[in-house]
Length: 80
Image (cartoon, rainbow, N blue to C red; front, side, top):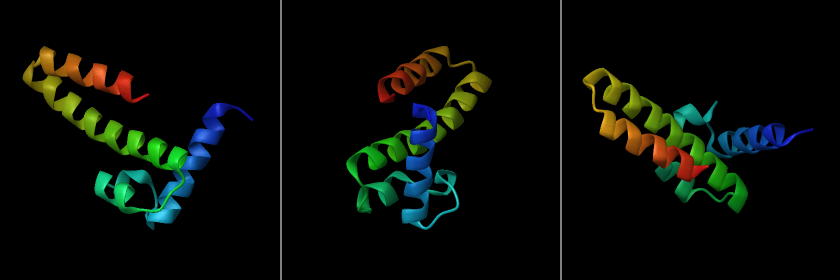
């Protein structure tokens, strides 16, 4: 009944509308070109961008780039 379930349902609806199994298979261009309700589009875009940030964060950690890691954390927070 909570917000998490609503957000998850919106992301699942976005994935179906995009024709992918999950948003892990989507990219920003797909979301931007799709006809989705605004809230669903924003939530899907956040998820896709967050997946990319996590990948970048792993690279930043491995290379010891703490400044980049900090920037990614700020971007993640702003996206929420």
